[in-house]
Every structure is written in C-alpha cells, then in structure tokens.
Image (cartoon, rainbow, N blue to C red; front, side, top):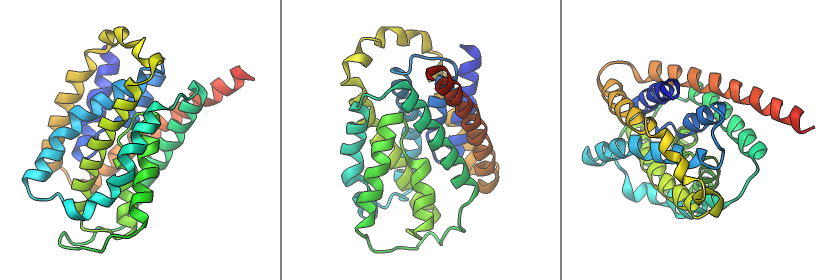
Length: 254
C-alpha cells in the first residue's frame, strides 16, 4: 500500500501542477495493483475531488473562471457522467477503455498548439455540448474527470486563452467527478464492496498533499511546458503497462 500511495502522491503532484486531477492515472495504478475493478472508479473519483477542488477554488478566486463561456460544456457532460457511472461494464472493457484513454491523453499532452492570449474570447457553438457530453460519459465509466481530454480539444478549437481553458477544465473535472461518483455509488455491486475501501485510506492524504504541492510548483517553480511533458511521460508509461495487462487478460479469456 505504501508503494501505491507513493504513486498516487507523484501522480497528484504532476497532474495538479498542470491543472488536472489525475483520475485516469489513479485508475490505471489501481488496476495494475489488482484492485477490485468495481472500486477503482470510486477511489479515483474521490481522489480527483480532493485534488481538483483546490485548483477550482484558486481559479475562481483569481477571476479566471469564464462562467458564461463555459456553461455549454456542462449541459450534457454532468448527466452523461452520471449515466457513465451507472453503466455496468466488464473488467476487460473497463481496462481496455482506460488503456486507450491514457494513450490518447498522453499523446494529446505532448502535442498542444501554442495557447492564445488570455483575453481571447469566442462565441459558443453547437459543438461544445456534444464534446462535453461525450467526455462526461467516458469520465463516468472509467473514473476520471475528463479535463485531460477537454484541454487539448479546447486548444485545438482555439476556444480561449490558456488561463480560461485551465479554469474551465478544473471545473469540468470537479462537476463530472461528482456526477460520476454519484452514478458509481448507485450501483449495487459497488455498494456491496464499500466496506473494503478502508484498506485504501492512505491514498487520500497522499493525493491531498501531492495536489497541494503540485499546485504550488506549477504556479511558482517550473515552466508549464516542462511539467506537461513530464506528466505526459508518466501517462504514456502507465498506458503501456495497462495495455500489457489488457493483452494478458485477452489471452487468458481466449
């Protein structure tokens, strides 16, 4: 458990330094540790909430949360995150989706267009609710917030400045994590296993401390691009390990 807690601490530190929660990598680490996959999204989403709550508060306090511009992204993402959390999926499908999600996320973090100036604005379009809804559904299923996917999409769309996108993604992760967790806890197969979560208590202070340290490092110590590359390397490494686990499961099932 100490080794897993250390992995969660490093993950929270790196993700928080670039404005994310870390849910995708928490889920992957839990799967690799052979945790009951019914509990994986619950633990990951709870850790997500601990990390991203501070970041969301900081963006809101600094006036960097574009509320009017961002709301279309949440109209479908929140209900579909709940739906995703309610869906019963097999362990094989869960691991496969998570591996692909991490691979895409890691590559997206390595390839990002130069951000626009912070005062950039654009009019809402019909694409935003659809994008938010699809990411919310994925978030609920695999126990992530979805911000790690939303950020590169918004940069690609030239949606706004770097700070506006970062604040929007933090809020996106927060609300989707709450909705996804509610959906997960509504499943009987999850509720029947909650008594075993006590064995994972060390993970929660680990991500709380790591998230706080990461937010300080991200704002004062290192260049955002360097932090993003380090985080992407971690994500891609874990994605590779998870892909190997998926192939092993496939060969065993066959």
